Length: 537
Image (cartoon, rainbow, N blue to C red; front, side, top):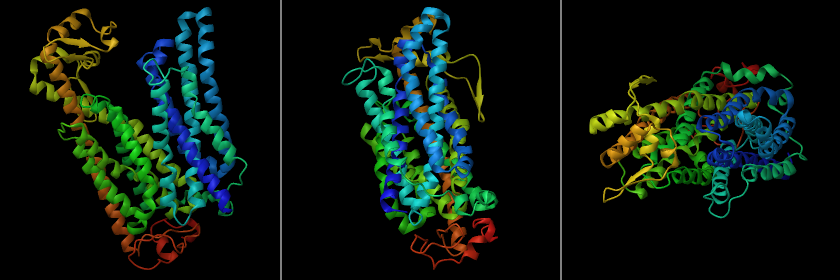
């Protein structure tokens, strides 16, 4: 392919992930504005945010098949139109809400929730289509160095998160750093980037998909599922999703009683990931992708364990977060590169299967399990260190899940206690209006205030202890990943080394290898139980 066209498709693919990151970050910051303008509470806001994961998870699973049937360009065009339609729906929210309030005030909030839900769902469908298109396409455009370029590609997501987070902080809500703009303008800002990648990409000629390159043999793209190493990678990618996205979802909340603005930990780790992913190429040429995954898993395990220790200074929290970032930065895109390098005949189907495993695991298990662990360890710590406070703050009902059973802290009381500051002179202040909004019974609120001097520090310390222990528990996930990748390292050494294959199962000259011998013949690749194309045996 023309190098100029290849570079334009790479830039446009990068911008799709930047747009997705900007939109996600701005939407995550919109809860307070929507609560004020439309009366949308936490439950409905959570449902709207959940629509973003639902559509993405569904489409990344089926998108691989659609790519092989419809081609890269058509799906990217559909995503382009859908993303702009999602932005347009945001501008319709305020005028439609005003009309609903005049005609049927009782359903106005519910109706606008549905509008925002479907805008987010369409947005997430487009995200899934992007992933289904850009990952295998970049792997085909840069077959000689897939790990490097897929890591650069996926620097777009943390880059977009940083840009979107800063933009929301500057222009969204009453506490905006510069000025408060209408929320629809802030949330639709991703559309500017969408238009940019559309102008760059859509006029270009796109490469053929794996099925088309293989002579139209559609069944061939599913041959990866007959390979034992590929099935191991699916399990490994599920664990990566659990660790990376699960911890990212909880990082700010787990640290909120330790840092004055805990979201900066996530912004900081995203910034590090953005930078680090540009340097995967030189690393992988020395140790090969499986070696990079093995080393990253060990570093991520140690980083999570370090973050779970009783660190008392903000500086050391960021040092530990830096170490953890070095571990997680390369995992997701390098896994996609391995799928592209070892199963090129499967194209988007192989990469889509890995992405779906990661998203489904974090959506159904990771986030919920980390939250359960935090609640369990918090409750245990409070019962041991302050039993009288424990009796005032726990629920009469028992919570259970993922093998844990405990009496949880009442969520409304926890939210209130986290909003109260006890000064050195014993005086108290409440900074969160939720604590005074009727979510707590007046009698319970008075008990909270009467015992604040002893209860607030105890509950907040236990909250922090629970978060730390949850991170230590989660460190077991990358430890398990390290074992899996070590077994794959041993396996590839036994068959002559890790080699990058073309669609016919032949090693690509000049690509990175494990350094433990010459290029393995194609017949060696087929011995992996389906690692080579189905036509090769």
